[in-house]
Length: 255
Length: 325
Image (cartoon, rainbow over all chains, first blue to last red):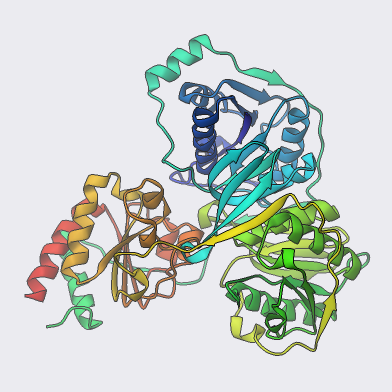
């Protein structure tokens, strides 16, 4: 079974996000990027499926900058191939562009299953997985937390609210939006990643694909208004005293 | 509004015989939008033997599509029926919940119609020919105001964006629509899996000490469990803790976990991703401890402590024990 995992870089939310002078985009000079955490789960699920059924895992990314480390890390974890879609993508791509580019690259590849993260923190124009499925004219299921494959059919668990799940059967080839792999994503030691960087090669493809999301960003802004927490300051002791007083006042602590 | 329809269509969703709250919230939002455009409010319910659900939405007209294949959600059959219906009814805006089902429906529908899609919308309104949405991005740290232009727009709506009660009520009419094109669907519903019986029902606890990524390692859970114990409450968590297998799924608070309303929700090391906030924002008293002063959790907490949970929790536990005698 041949599995393709599409991955993308997203800003690390631990860092401050600054809006650039246009007011319509984040200031990329100050952003630190990392792999979309759900894509990491998609990769893990792909590696688990490969371990169970054999086959290959290919990771595919659009070169929006800084993707090499992500691709080498995927190879170090056990992916067989890493493919980078090159072009002028330094400003980032919309979900529609990403889906069109992935679809164009996948037309040249042999795949039974495409796994990707269920969502990303910046997909303003929709999630890539179902858009990609539409472009490939294959079925999809999103919010998946486990995949089993039997022949040309995958059985997936799709998550709903309240811990309820649905078991859904999907014909292959298909695109699945992964929420969580069956186990936490594995870790690739830095030494192993370094070794892979010396020995492995990232393939480059340059498919032509254009997509207009039909969405124009007018402005970005930091959320304002709403509730703002009253900040309790002081030493841990002072903070704890204040909280205990608060809990008493609200009847959470008696006495 | 040249080119764009003026009607607003809500894609209702249901599970286990009940319409989801988001469906009523979207009906309420549709009423706002249609009042501004002079259009009609429409909704669609797909199901099997579920016509009673169509009678509950406060819109001008509900289309009810009945077919055995539609009894439970599966992406392919739903999307086939919805694309046909939207093509025929030509609304200007289609509202879809930012939910598990909605994530399968909205992009597929937008792609099938060639319409733009605005995701994660907290608000949506008309501005001349365009539909303008306010989307919550980057884990709730940045909002984007974006305009969609086309024959229509698909908008995914975040939970809690409109009052559900305004969307409850009898519709002007319910119209049966025949389902067609459901042969050979490529995704098929097999079974619903109920959550395993939990040792603790976090929806019934008066006090929850809830932990997130900031707890750093499984060994540190004990520290939070001790505070929960001292407060006579239980331990709950955000998604990453569950995905790591540190706590069972039954302890998860948020969109795909439980919605909780305890008397005290103490969030330690939880940044407050929108999916988490959805599950706890109505708690009576929310106290958040986080090292990042810009963490979105402080936007819903009543009281905040900007600091390290490892410094605060042990001292707090001790003082709570003393106070409780």
